[in-house]
Length: 90
Image (cartoon, rainbow, N blue to C red; front, side, top):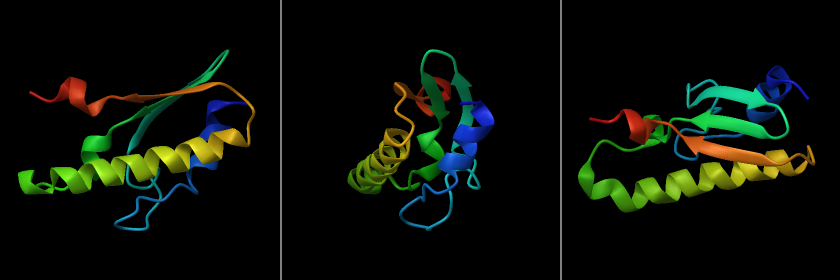
């Protein structure tokens, strides 16, 4: 399986508040396929801007992760989801 195949698979994963593909929204910043699939996701792009919305943000991220996991179950490969946005936040 190639990175391009994984990106096509993830096009069906929707961001729950907008219903748009996480690929089209730019949440997936990279995919590496070797012995396992590693997907680099920037969840900050899906987070509501207000601090009072933090509990909602966790629900959104959880829903996205569950959908990514469902997509990967079909591949039979090991996978990791790496959140990259928090490492860039200053």
